[in-house]
Amino acid sequence: MASTPGAGDGRRKAAAARRRAREAQIIAATRELFDAKGVREVQIDEIAGAVGINRAIVYRHFTGKEEIFALTLVGYLDELHEALVEAGASASDPTDRLAATIHAFVDFGLAHPAFVECAQALMLRPGDELLDEVSERALFLLGRAMTSCMGVLSDVLVDGVASGRFTATQDPTLLANMLYASGLGALQLARLGILVGEAAPGVPTRGPISPDQVREFVVSSALAMLAQPASA
Image 1: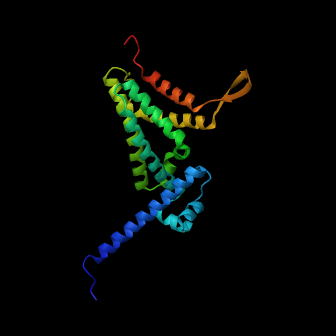
Image 2: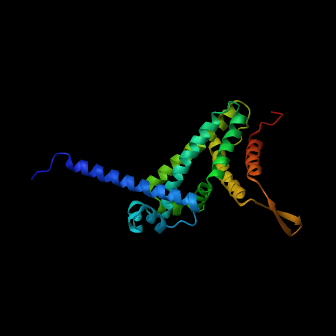
Image 3: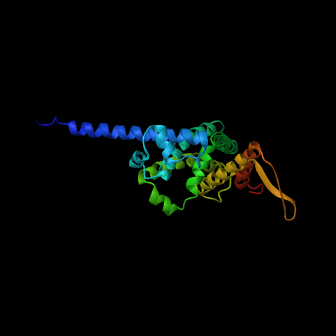
């Protein structure tokens, strides 16, 4: 019996839709586990169990744990992008916009510690290893999500330079990347809540550091790098 014209295409589309739905289930389950337990405690078997499948099926959809991490991070970054855009729109002065944007970044990281862990886990991997372990599609989605977030910050920096409020000594894209990376480190410090110092030479001591202190330090550090000298 001859097949119905277009039946093959319909089956392929249905199979592709089922595959996308299963991948979305796996990423959603990973996000829930990350938020509940932290990134380091979550294993592939646990992710598979949360979806009701075995680990072999997970590997049919993803190259490995790093790719799942990358695509889960995409979800966090998409939410962060919305927060940054809203914060940037809340002020017109470049200095106020920069402060609001950085506040939004820090607040998001404090509210979602798994985002910080996930981002740092991927940043710790050498670039060539990551390229070998994550598919081009996943890297594209991750790169697009990251650039959308840093693009918000870059726009603020460009506007500040154009208005004469900020110096133009650094490329805005490079500076946005540096602020993103250093911001993740500051968020980790806020999560630990411990400040290490010296009571005397060679005698270590520790004290508390609050999220508010970290937030204000990140903002003031960024503004200090960008502030137009008074003599300019």
